[in-house]
Image (cartoon, rainbow, N blue to C red):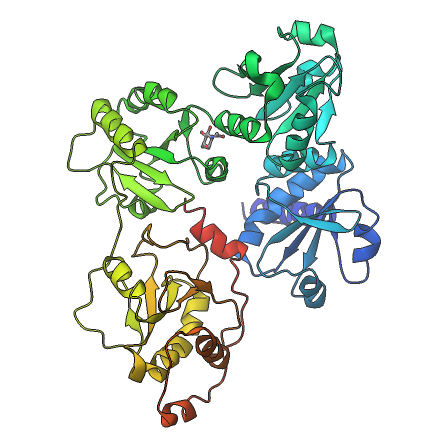
Length: 509
Ligand SMILES: *[C@@H]1O[C@H](CO)[C@@H](O)[C@H](O)[C@H]1NC(C)=O
């Protein structure tokens, strides 16, 4: 027993060693980076840190993708940024993992998924011309080669809308697969008369034809919105892996929160299909596992764990409209609700902490309920830090931010240094920005409603310099305060949203 167990362990570790040795991911260092990357027509490079959790999750997926893509002559490589810090700095890496696609040494950001099959499909798309010239023999396979495949059938390559189609394809090569057919026989077999535009999809009805009367005059904008409309299923489950698909469509997302183990769940979800159909292209509909994504339900401002529940989220504006949980959720009620939403008749729900009874910290505690009153007070300059309690950069900034509050305490009728917990307080629609990473620092000069982004380092001196430069009120701070301000600067950190912060804020699932 003991013997066989240790044998199994040995075997397992042996397999692991073998697997590691057989990795298809190239290791890059300062020594070989240019000689590998610069000549490559196409190569994907991951900049990672051994301690980073997202990198560890990505590793097996990346390995698997590398093996699949090796057969297609598309190399995948990685750089250990702890070992090769200078190399990573040269490439402007500020969060982990950072993935970049290089063509002959020129980088673009990788914008694909982090699962093996997603990486493969993204990189295959990168390797093809933006529009594939589809021949008779390849047509059947091509139209099934991706989730969404757009095919233009024309009599010749220059016939409208072909030139526009190519332009759109070049811009959206990351999003869809584009093909062009000039063979009349193939068009006939596909059941169309050129010019014709068809989207082939791996879901719903499998195929949608663009209205034939207007196809030759289709513009880039129309084509893109039509593709977006057809790129997500009518009503499917949303998960952490494919939330981005919905986010990228740019449309509001309507969620049916259900307990998947509840009896009749499928039939219940099914009743939403006609509604989803009537808002197709305007609102995307999904169902979501309310048990697994309870936290997301809270972020959508659902008050209690009561299922089913319904919420509309405007992902771009970061606003949400939960259906009143004290009411019974019937499809009729939801239909009224969606109609009212689409006509702009209901206000978004804004989560707010209660207004503090006293303000006894060096920094003003801002909550949504007081946002307009405090931030848009035209007589004051206002500097706000939007933070999350879990964010490490925010914790490190706290003493400096407090110090800033103390410095300007004597002139707080002219300048407000504030902080807002953006996980407990929604940014109201009156603010002309959304918060995409933490901390986000915004300055609103007195006398207006415009905001200035703070993008400097997070040292006390730099913050003071910025305030003095942008404040519209004259800030005569008593001299001893300034003298007390000598400080050790907090280590400067890149304020841009890193992959980690993005993961936490954009993709909330
Ligand atoms: C999203 O993920 C869920 C769960 O894995 C899956 O059932 C669904 O089909 C996916 N949707 C799309 C559009 O890929």
